[in-house]
Length: 248
Image 1 (cartoon, rainbow, N blue to C red):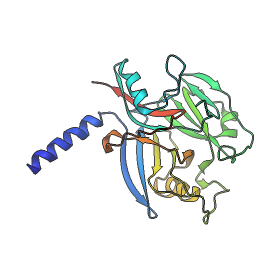
Image 2 (tube, helix red, strand yellow; image 1 turned 135 degrees about the horizontal axis):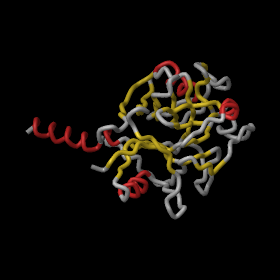
Image 3 (cartoon, rainbow, N blue to C red; image 1 turned 90 degrees about the horizontal axis):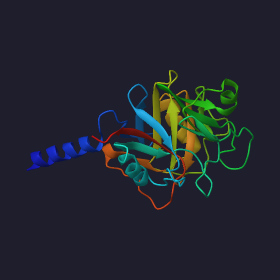
Image 4 (spheres, one colour; image 1 turned 90 degrees about the vertical axis):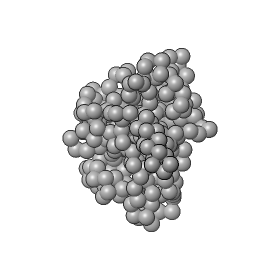
């Protein structure tokens, strides 16, 4: 009976994590728990999503998954991907399928987004990059998808200069880091409340990401089918990043 249960669980896990989907796992770093999802840009189909065909925000991972089913697709790993206004429109730069709907914001401002340096997560053919905003404006990369957020967590191997080791500001936080060659995008969400300094060190010291970008805090959510984590919630999200796979 135990063996049969184990087989059934394994089949469920395989069904929930189709081949070619980003792999998610749990880890503990410096006493805090995190869930990490790694995307292989040579293998996985990673995209950004905001609004449906009627112009309304998807808002929820489940709503996006249902819309993808009509195209013979399904949503694998997914995460909220940047700060947004009350109407769910992005606070910063946003590009979807090559179409820019919000320009780059390069000036300092209130809140975490305006805590410069901030950055842009850019998806191009076969690569993903976290790029500091001023550098992004200089390089003008041709991104198929892009979302701006802030602050940067790691900039060329260094933590954001405003992060304090003794900070008392603790939240559930999520973000993304990219490898130097652009072939790996590693997403993380904390399962415990953590500081910016702790979260940045996760990307720099544990995940070895030279550049990493903060997405959001407090409302951070993750869909990880292979961990049986749906990411369901009552609050609608703005931009969503996720891996798309064939439904069969």
